[in-house]
Image (cartoon, rainbow, N blue to C red; front, side):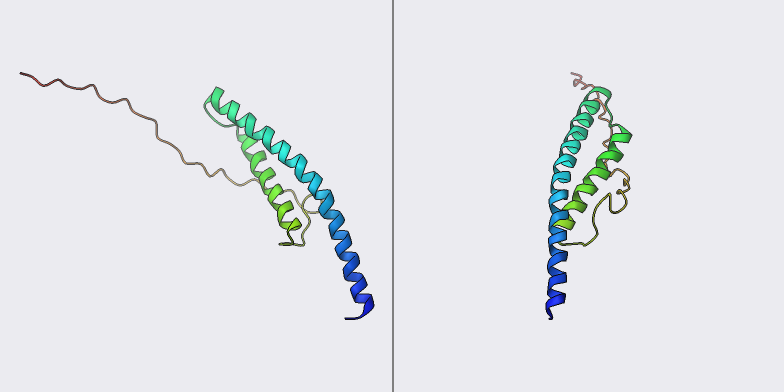
Amino acid sequence: MNTSQRSAERESLILRALWMLIFFFVWQLAELALLVVIVAQLVLQAVNGKANDSLLELGDSLSQYVAQIGRFGTFNTDRKPWPMSDWPKPRPADRESVPPVQPAPPKQEPQP
């Protein structure tokens, strides 16, 4: 490997390290935003009995974004997360629907 190629690789690695540092701080903000979404969904579920659809989408996009930052930071991809690429599209919620609980029928006492 010649000196100019090694120098170019080193500059590329230094540039990537700077991006990783920037995305580290973005990760911290995204985690805080995700915590706000989680708490809001918990409160809305407790009050209204159902989750907010807009927050479901935001939470999924935000969690995918945090995963993209992690993949970039761990060298699993060279694709930089948003704003260098598109914001992740929310996926449909993957929730199990729990059937409502039916009250137990009244017990019949045996006839003497």
